[in-house]
Length: 147
Image 1: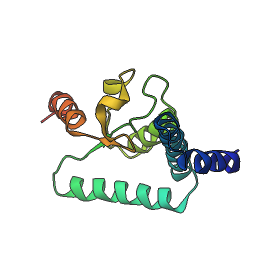
Image 2: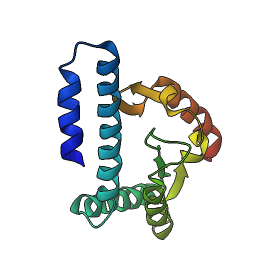
Image 3: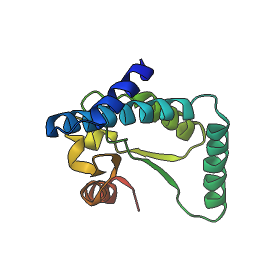
């Protein structure tokens, strides 16, 4: 349970052992990852934030269309468990939104699927894409988005 994990983390944090501090950092990292996945899954369900996001994306697309500007929705994966990605359903939700609203959709998950996510992290506690991830994405997008 979350309560027992928190107690274990407090116990491990106070120990003067490199191995125990390392173990504590790993446990905290895993909890952060679980919390992040849970947050994204909730965000793209029937949540007010998702309703607002849908409205903003469709509004941006409409504004671009009226001005003759091409609009694409590019989706980065969360760099966590790329070999058994836990947020594929979120990507499908975004794809469905794009298809229903005739928005060009580019999913970067296939580009990174199965790779070691740690290579792409900004920091071990921050799964945002680093410069290398952005370079790979830019190279891919250069060919994926029609001009």
